[in-house]
Image (cartoon, rainbow, N blue to C red; front, top):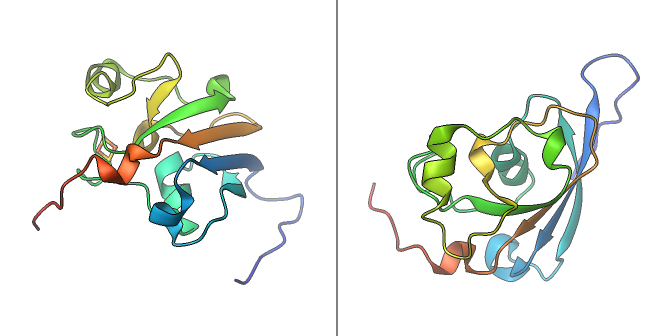
Length: 131
Ligand code: FES
């Protein structure tokens, strides 16, 4: 993988750690912890997908499913606040917790650090969606 080193100018870079409960099904490897860098304004789902972490996103990131459900272990206040639509939707996610969010609705706003846990059933709970 080619890494770009960012200089001080330009958008700030925010450290985001992803912890995968079932790394093999999400990435094809056994590496559970991924230390990533987000740009401010980026969504957690986008960031994960861009880095080869295939979080389910059955609705394509428009808050119409709950398959992109994650837990924010650290840095909830560094993310955009959840909307009523997200709150309603996330309640349908299996394993709902107080720190549950829909990753497609979480925009990186603060300086971090942010720690995101992706539950093991993220892929297992989902049937193939026909196109
Ligand atoms: S991808 Fe459907 S709600 Fe996030």
